[in-house]
Length: 205
Image (cartoon, rainbow, N blue to C red; front, top):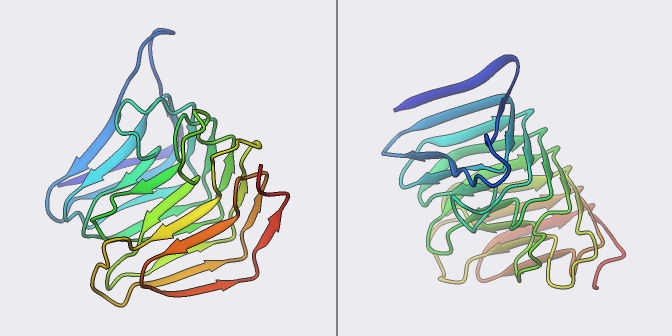
């Protein structure tokens, strides 16, 4: 189906009580589309599953994600999705990665113009942006700022193809700033990757 969370001014989705652990929004079904604009999500996130057309997130804020929906990230991309875009958004103090995906599922996505601060506060062995290649769809990560808060296990940007998924698997990691992380950038597995113009500052703690 199709769902529209584009607020004219702004809207907040949050928990009611201090001990509540809301999950958030789960998007699934072939060709599903979910649009988010000017939404603040507190303690919850967004997850897609299966062959969705895409999750489009712009000018949104994700604060204090609690991992109740999934441990993969505030926004988790399901397999075989193609039209995902996360732009001009703000991620702060999530318990796990900010953006993630399944190792066995190609998901094309653009992540651009976003701020990531103090993500993965549980200090697990995964980067702030933790993606799998996109198959015949591109993965583009550009013009983002990531601060890892000096956590000893948390990387900055990671893109993997650990299962040698088929496709052109084009990846562009460009003009990002990554600081105070365990590492700045890492790629693993077969892919056609361009790494250009990034600033990696004070990493490896």
